[in-house]
Amino acid sequence: MDLNNILSQLESFNRDEVEKLLQQYNREVMSVFLPVSSQKLCQSVLTVLGRQVQPSCQKTCLETLRILSRDKGILAPVATKEGMLTLGKMAKLHAGEEGDSNQKNTQEDTPSTEEEKVVVEALKCLCNVVYNSPAAQQVSVDVNLAHGLCASLRTAHTWHHEVGLFTLRLLFLLSALRPDIRGVLRQDWDAVRLLTEVLEHTLHVCWVGRYEAAHPGPQAMPMPAHDNERAMEALKALFNLTLSDPGGEDDHQFRLIAAILRHLLMLKTETEEKTEEAHSHAVNLLNNLPVSCLDVLIDIPVQGGLEKYNGKNMDAVQVLLDFMEKRIDKGSNYKEGLTPVLSLLTEGSRHHREIRRYIKAQVLPPLKDVKIRPEVGTAIRNKLVRLMTHVDTGVKQTAAEFLFVLCKENVDSLLKYTGYGNAAGLLVARGLLGGGRGETQYSDDEDSDTEEYKSAKPFINPITGHVEEPMPNPIEEMTEEQKEYEAQKLVNMLDRLSRQSVIRPMGVRPDGTLAPLEETLYDLPEDDLGSDSD
Image (cartoon, rainbow, N blue to C red):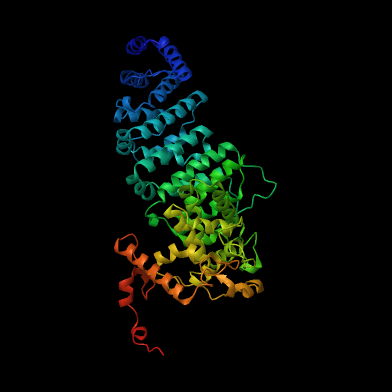
């Protein structure tokens, strides 16, 4: 493709040739991925877009610009106020304008099919440019592009799929790449409420109570792919806006979001993979909401719940548990894929008694068979205990904290289910090596042990957490002199390793924290130091 020919035609503005040449250029570049890009071509296309041309020509120019916008090195002509305003105008975002006229104009404009294609291409261009150019991100802030996007959100019910999809994606990109505008979006332009309304409309929520959506039912059709795509973009944008300092929103707004997310957890999409993706975004957003709002997940008066959990409905909690187990079974990407749902279930259990009781019944049922180590097996408890010694510190701390909260932060209860060896990392971090409880206050309901556990308890190895097979005693046939010799030999070896700083003997202070052994000896209580021995 002769780039010079295209440039000359663009400069002479031959209306008949420009569109044909650019269409040919687009086809060739897209089919064989030719590395043909030019900053001058980018500027020339923008110049044509600034003139009065037919929508078909505008669409072709925008397609060319979209292809060019993948090259970060040639975006200078677009990353200007003039360039961004031109694209904003093509996308009908009315960037740079103030007041209520934005909303009015957006409502009054009813684009034709050809004009709508222009809007979609312009939004695609803006997404690429904003993503690839920090300069364009700054210009977007300067010309109030996000304000135009929020004005467009007010007419979301009139959107066709691609217009809505790329409007939401552009808002997500701006709020992700420019954290400084999140507060303005929330407080000045009401973006959280608008996005909540978009999500509610997209998911076809039908309210049967203040914070209760009608259950989709077992025969409900899967969520259409287009609705799912728009919902994911709205969830990602909402996540950004609630990521930090969400205090400007009232409790009602957060509870409304939680109720919509509960409805989403009950829905199925056209594929299991897409359903899992939707649930992942729901989990991420739920983590941003105040933990006090999580009662909306279980307080479903119209549908009702389980009597043993004070009438609370645990369907959404079970979906989250199933999601967590799927992520564990994947065996990879635990940090991003698993820790969010573990954190959500941990905080939900810490602050809501019924959630904790239900999850504990599923994850830590009463112990019966204690002949197998806690980390061995396919039950959800075994999988979580294995994570307590994971190589990733964040993963193992999150898994351990989850189990600790299910045990009401009682060290003895935790050790019963995990063994001392698996729990040692958490106990060191919490300063609870000496036993005791965490700081959170829990209800007084007591756990009951099974008869099998009670009978086996005296024989359980507290380190491994299970009943071990009898092992031969290696010193049983030694004489007292041999035993004393071996003991002294061991002391000498440990002393040599300690002097060479290979190991450092540690002890436990009275407050349950680790310290060098010599320090812990000085910290012994006076009763221990002064006690008489007979």
